[in-house]
Image: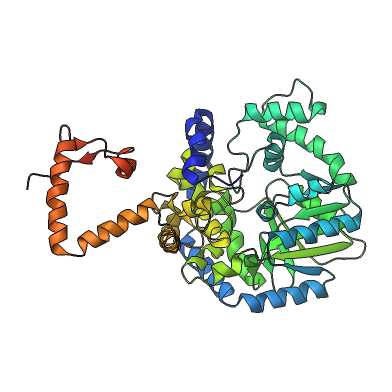
Length: 460
């Protein structure tokens, strides 16, 4: 079944008052914390500019840094796999899991593994993927999709989570309360045995430090650290855009990311791992580097700014569209404003769903104001809207909108045609107006007046 356009996918969310209340509360709370954390840092703007500069310079020499990363990971005892697309990445990971003989894997939170559809691929081969991050586990229990990069279960309230835990974790007991501490304790008890018996773990990575071949994960619960240390085989899947050249560069991002994602001065757990060490941690380490449309985005001088993203989710917490629709309307992986510019570049704008994402914005600019690496999201959105229009020009049968625009261009291309159209259009507009407002236009123009009235044209 094809993915619906953004407007169609958002209708159910707009009608769900509970969902909207949950999202409004969650984003408002994080938004206040982020603003306070940024305000207490005297050099916040300098940090943002440094983050932008490092990301831009890295992307311009990405091939060099990736080669250095591969060399360093290999020298440290790891194995690097290159995946051109999601299918190739799935094949690599499922092959490694099969070779390890695992019937179950534990997973740390990872948007990249969602991007390649890993859980479904593992299920088809009879392997159970256990999400270990609390929010991801809630999403898995509910059989739905994440709605937020940082808090995938932001669309669920405590009462809903309690009911899911009662259903999926019988050991928690029917008397489980919706107190956050009680829910966390139940999840901890549920996961402990799974961590201890797991032979394979799959993680993502926030950053890849090229000079040492080190992977870095920032988290607030400690579940990723358990995945990194207990299983014998560790598989990490990361986009090629996650590279950071040096540890000196990491100083900038370790300050930017916590403040922009959760409003914290530092992340509770910062885990790093480099290759394998005999007698300590996993015996095998595999790094799967994923392209999946990133080089296509890199080739676009305007659009490549989206690859600066460090997945902090600050843009979602200030976006008026996201606050009302939630993240699921943006597609299965990247929600909010960053998803509206990242997904169409990685997947193209040929499908109706992907072509609709650049229009899922008011262009208010709040997202650009808070982005820690200064991605001008509205500028990229407008750029992508132009790409959508250009792609439609190549269709054998033009869309009604394109036919209308061509007609307007022809009319306005000649002064006499323009004046004639104005006189006739004004006459018809006055006939349609009531009390100085036009509340419904005919035909395709009615799309405009579905959401707003149109002022009647003046007498002169």
